[in-house]
Image (cartoon, rainbow, N blue to C red):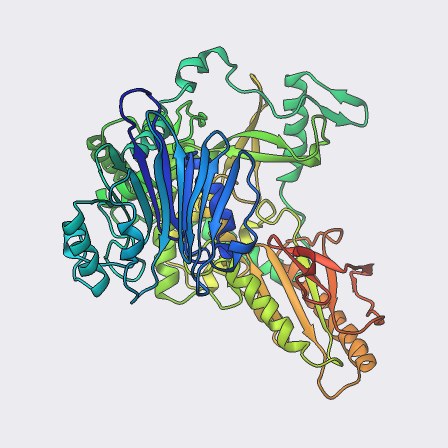
Length: 625
């Protein structure tokens, strides 16, 4: 997001209502449309001043409850616009290139409010400013003027000119106490006025938002009138009808998830299964290994990082409540954590999950249309974040993360994977006779179905640090959960596969679990974001389109056999109903290759939403225009 300044103007006696104004140097509005909604939602200003609007100045977005007054600029980054709340009455006074001034009808008397954009290296429009010296005016904008008097490290020509003009006219500045330039520590976005009394920049609004974020809102007065937990669904749809009793719902879900997390069936003829179980059995008999000493800095860093939610964990404590204790008590927690680290053990309470379910399909969903949310011990989660930090440090130092992977890791973002995939497709289909086939593979409940012996085998192959590996083994072994529906609680059930959904370790362990997946497809391009796998098969430049389709079908058959082998070896089933194929091409009516996974056909689609972005057969942007 570009630089934003928030101002509050305390009006003179006669009204107790203040003006809230935002100055936003958007630097091309067409790429920052979403920021407008964020600003209006967060600050609810009466006036929003935009500078550096760019080409979007000709087609400003319609915003309910507001109206625009705008003026174009003389370059691609110019143009100013002011968004007024519909309750404010205005009259246009002056419109010139990159300058706009309106009269705002407020009590006890009208004021003149302006917006200006001055390109770098250009002088300030002194002749325009001189016109309003004897009036009540406020002109905000991007002046690109630097001077030591308003916290810049050096002066430029525009800054010296503006400083002299202010001295000669007696006018004043309204500027923030922090840099506004993205390329330096200079303040270049500010306002000039006949009288700066009554203006406060940022501090008041930020203090209010901080006050509210700490729980000082209406909830602390009314929360006692609400039930501890109200389910997001009213009942379950079963073969015998709809169930509404909370206890019966909890017991039904416990039966379902007990089967869902049961011990998987091992194939005695599968060598990978046999090897994984042998290593797992040997590891089971090994003693715990003490962890490296935990520091107060680690505890404090990860304690502050936790979200301050009010929901209670397995111990009946909320993160919001725990974060009210003085930071000095973290020393006691550090001592307790080190007692655990010395034994290499896991906090016992952190191995049980209090699970609530959210509906993905209306008020009366089926059991398989629910999303389980695990509420884990807050102390246990803090300890897990410390372990997680050490795992990531080891991954960085040993260059574990591969180029085909991204997600849940710094500098390996979702956008990286989308751009990389689209670029691979664009280059592969540059020639009309060269189609590309993309197979979007969906693993069935990937995090829930992670088979612990297969994970252990992969970590051993990666030469994972023994103390951390032993701790992860203890953390996964012997986990339990109970289902909470309203005030009803199910029996405790044991978990033999998967990782708890609410833990920071779940995604990272899964990334390590599938570390070698892309290496199975040596001659193909793979993209892996968490559990979302995309396999790209491209045609040859020297073949005709028809021959390329036949070649894609042949390579897809090989790829599906490889995928089936990997899925079977790791007991990580593929959801064939959600696995789709997309043929990227430039032909009007192309023939389609036939693709099967374990004799089941894979459906072709003309559009697929990959990581939130629609990818079409033509790689076009028409669906967004």
